[in-house]
Length: 204
Image (cartoon, rainbow, N blue to C red; front, side, top):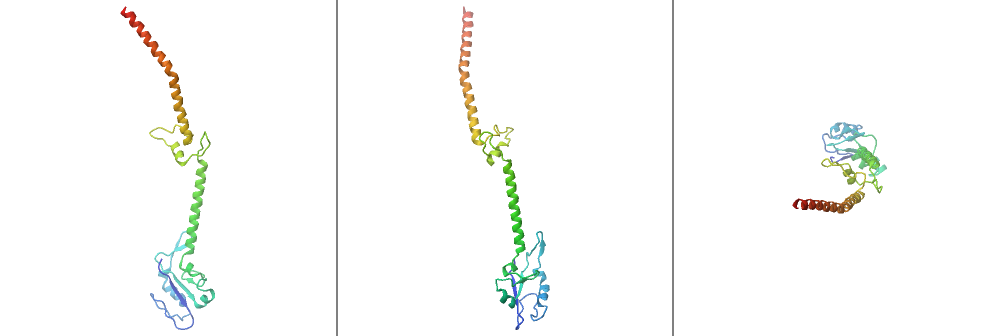
């Protein structure tokens, strides 16, 4: 934003108009109107969506009078910016409170949308079929990911329960092999004995 130009007007005494494209006669009745019209291209903004103006590359020109300054003080609503109705304090006059309010509303609307989306996503978050705990984001993603054509082996379990389930399955497989080992050894021994009997008869 360009540096603001504050113009104070007093009906008493001779004054010097600020430097600019035109020098006005301060004592004229329509001095402020003439100054606004002559400098319009330098201060007039463009309407934007949201009910505020954009003043990119424009100069805020603010007018006041000694009477207003005496009545409201330099921090009160004693200033009127060219192109606006009503009086404001100096900070609001040289700033853009409508834009600030609109941006604040947009940010608040965006925050509410994000909160709503997060709540809806949370309602869809899976829970573990064993312990009942909600999935973490990483576990949720992994449970629905297909890697090289292979889906998750236990998509209904959280990480901890999946680890315990896999360990239990491995242990069950090992127990099964352990139970089958004597049977396998007996079958091998029987096969060897049968082969030995056939060999003995063949030799005799």
